[in-house]
Amino acid sequence: MERGLFISATGMTAQQWRMDAVANNLANVDLNGYKRDEAIHKAFPELLIRRTNDDGVYRFPFGSADTSPIVGKLGMGVEQNEYYTVFTQGALKQTSNPFDLALENKGFFVVRTPEGDRYTRNGAFVLGKEGFIETNDGYPVLGENGPIQVKENNFTIDQKDRVWINAQYAGDPHRLVSMEENEWKNTQLLDTLKVVNFPRTRFLAKQGDSLWRETSHSGKAFDIPLNQRPKVEQGFVEGSNVNPVREMVQMIEVNRAYETNAKMIQTTDNLMGKLINEAAVYR
Image (cartoon, rainbow, N blue to C red; front, side, top):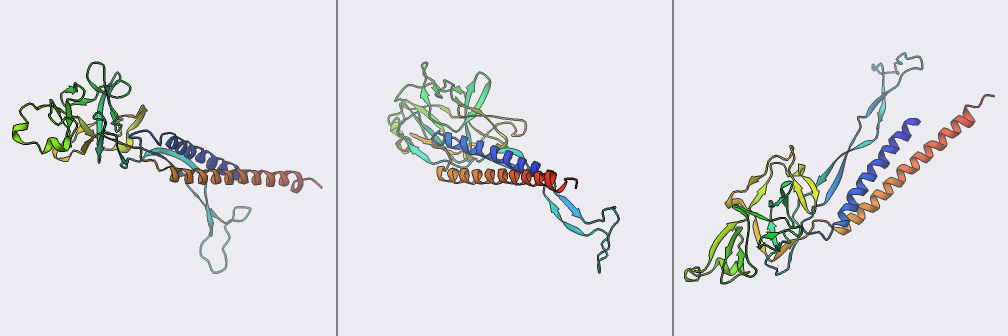
């Protein structure tokens, strides 16, 4: 009966991990580029129960050749396996801000931090003091040739990740693509945004501030070929992929499961109390 206490305790611990993931998702529901987490668990190996005599001698049931008939299986509880990040596409929100960028499909922007290059889906960038495109935390966004330096209202980023300066139709990438040849005379190609991906994105580690870092399991970042790159939408940001309704439903489910495991512990404790105080009393 004591085993039931440990099994229920592992169930309560598992629900705590799930609740942490749900709470973190709800806290970041409005964070641009956020990808929701799910707590993944795995069960301990089950035990196969067989029937024997009290003295350990096998009993042969009538009509059976099995020396130790199977009674059933006994679960041994669960344990936390990992936090799994779901990299589904978030909804695009139009802002009309030329520094806001959104990626359609897989890929990451690259930013330079004091700890090295980091990766983000949050394209809510700003113009830094020195004229570089930066994150809100002041980390420069990288192009193929390094940090990208522009001036306000004189650049356009088309859907092929190319950064154009002195564009006559600055801020309008769709018009830029359809410009006539005589309209390109004052337009220069400055750089191309650096967009990368990983062999196994599920193993990327969240660092905070909407940044990811590579790990030994995720593999090294590689440049996406130009003909396979995701489209870049200027004037849009990618919202989080968190569904608040789904998370609230999951929170209720976690609470119910936690309460069930707690009641199992209470019931097991009461039964053990009766066994000790009543059945085991010497008469």
